[in-house]
Amino acid sequence: MLPQLPPCRALLATALGLAGRHRLLPCHHAPLLARLRCSAGGEVRAAGGGDAGGVLRHLMLKLRATGPVTVAEYMREALTNPGQGYYTRRGGVGQDFITSPEISQIFGELIGIWYISEWMAMGKQNAFQLVELGPGTGTLTSDILRVFNQLASVLSKCDVSIHLVEVSPKLSAIQAEMLTGGKVQSNPENNSAYMKGISKTGIPIYWYRDIQDVPQGYSFYLAHEFLDALPIHKFQRTEKGWHEVLVDIDPEVPDQLRFVLSPSRTPATENFIQPEETRDHVEVCPEAGILIQRLACRIEKNGGAALIADYGHDGTKTDTFRGFRNHKHHDVLKAPGTADLTADVDFSYLRKMAEGRTATLGPIRQREFLKNMGIDLRLQVLLQNSRDSATREQLLHSFDMLMNPKKMGDCFHFFALLPHHRVVRPAEKDNPQSKSPLPPVAGFGELSLNVHHHSRG
Image (cartoon, rainbow, N blue to C red):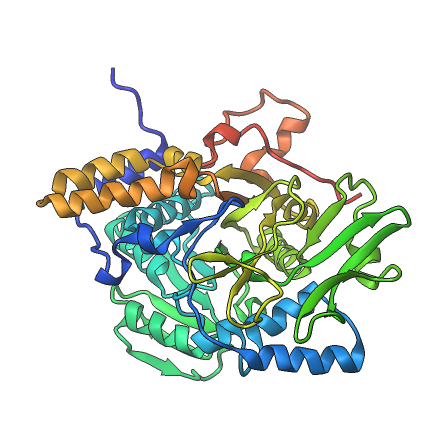
């Protein structure tokens, strides 16, 4: 008797085994290795240049007037200053880095399988919202929608809608073009969305500026490379206790900035350093913490799940604050506004911020998650359906970018928030043998027993 496929593999075989179509990358993505760079810290990025002396001038005036600023405030100015910020001037468009969805369609297809697999495991509700935070160019959403369309028979009795949280007008226009062919309506009435449309496959799509604007309801959330650009606070342990790292004018070099330590404890030091902290240098991203709290509250109240994919660590790293410009590492304090600034996501902090409202799974390395999701099977189908060697070469190259430990395979991690009942039956506390085991959570196969629970007592 043949072994039975796990649920997500069966879905994969159904949806993707039948469809061997390969989404060809636009020519500007090739050759990828010429544009990508994996740092010692582990991320793969390609940078754009430009001059933004305006940010430095603005910062100098501010620092002379009010004194040193936090690293979080410095990041906000450098990245999102209304006139000269790095993201503002580019509209957030992908000159700064190339992401997994841009490299291969397989990535988005497997994410789509994950959501359907979890929807089935949680009882096939008759409606769900897919909420993506920072959808970039819309490539990932597009690949997920293709899977939803290929599994239309599975989702036939489910009312699916897409909800995109995007602040950039330039990016939302690019997303609208990719997902709807540009057929959208601005400022729809009686709705917190600022734009709406219908996908090419007939699914309604809504755009919002904030997660708070997205309607409550049974939802699956997606944050892919969303948290790493949020501003961080940095702290240093000294003989006199914890001090916050600040940015100030360098008195010895004109027009240059330097890091200094706060003379005394700051409000952030009081709020963000855990009493049990063992590291000597810590980075904390409060905005990521608030976002996780909001997602955990929504999942606890309405059901669903959240999948977070980013590069990061589980509370082990210290100084990960880096800049990228023109494919190279760039001093984070030089020419603010001309380089992409980023810091690794601390998943141990995210777990604490879920505060026991949900169970958490991961972080698990991208190569392990994608392998558990069946990436090898999907690659074989696409290779078999490829008619020319150039396409096959591109597929193998993309697969290597996603899975190679020295490229994206070990840099990126997956982390999930799930309702407690999805991973532990309520009755199991009293009678562990009471019922059949719950279906494993797709992608986190090897971590299914490593579930973190926290009581709020």
